[in-house]
Length: 192
Image 1 (cartoon, rainbow, N blue to C red):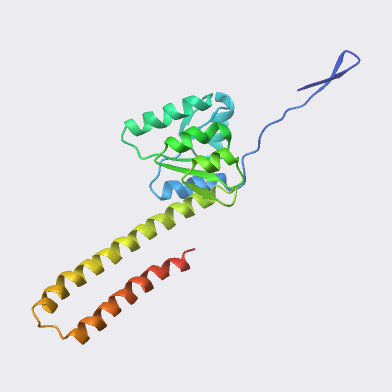
Image 2 (image 1 turned 45 degrees about the vertical axis):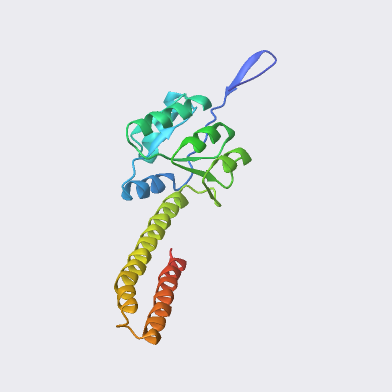
């Protein structure tokens, strides 16, 4: 911006959005999870490239209009990628809805929050990696519970049906199975 008065330029001011503290660490955490971060922004190419360099992102789509963000998401999906998008503005809403997983920042607009699959309460990008780790752990726990329950039923039902398993023992084993599944699931509460 140029500052002037009385028809004469008196100064030049440079204004830029600062990259949030912790953004580079968040990108590194996402990479450590095996994800490939992409910067998709409406900002001009020079700014986008500078931000990408600062936070460690290699793939940049800049000067993208809101409606074109959906096209980029669809193109990435057509390449066989599963796309998780993090956004906070009205201009991100359609792309958040199109992505395989839309994550809205809780500090963002109502449109972004409504269009997303998951809302991150804090406006900190680092919680994105936490949400993905928790989701993976939850899915792993669900699979473990299903394997346990299926294995128990495959083993116990034929024994009970043939009369080889005492009904009292079968009832106790069924109760133990339920307690095991619940206890195993409760371990998720300790997630940090």
